[in-house]
Amino acid sequence: MSNENQELRKAGLKVTLPRVKILQLLESTSEQHLSAEDVYKLLLEAGEDVGLATVYRVLTQFESAGLVVRHNFDGGHSVFELDRGDHHDHMVCTDTGKVIEFHNEKIEELQRQIAEEHGYELTGHSLVLYVKAKDK
Image (cartoon, rainbow, N blue to C red; front, side, top):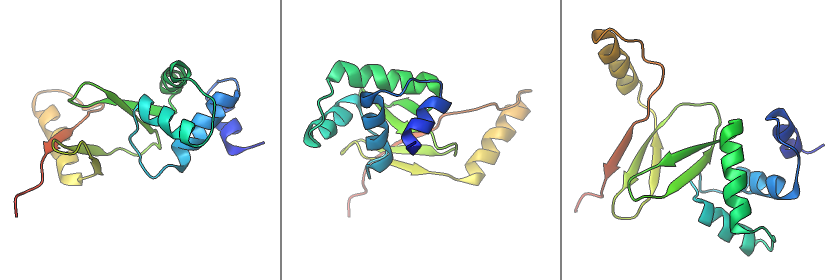
C-alpha cells in the first residue's frame, strides 16, 4: 500500500484517485504554499483529469482531516501547505507574493511571556510579516 493511501486512511478519508493525486502533488512540489488554482494547474500540466471544484473540495477535506493547513494572507486568496507538525511563522513579500517560512525561538518566547503577563497561557498563534525587498 502506498504512503499516500496510508496517510489518507489514517486521516479517516476514503482513498480516491483525486485525493491520492493531490496528496502526491503536495508532497512532491518544491513550492510549499499553493492555492487551489495552483494545484489545479499543476495537475493539468501533469496530464491529470481533475476538475477545479474537486481540487477545492479535496483541499477542504484535507484541512478538516489535519493533512493541510490553510493560510489566508492579505490579498484575499487562500494557500495550503502540508501539515508536517512543525510550527513556523511566515513572511509574505508584498511585491512578489512569495511566502518565506521562518522560526525564531526569541519571538516564540516573547509571545509566551506577553500572554503570561496578561494572565493567559499561549495555546497557539499565527504570525505573518508583510515585507518587501530593500532597495539596494
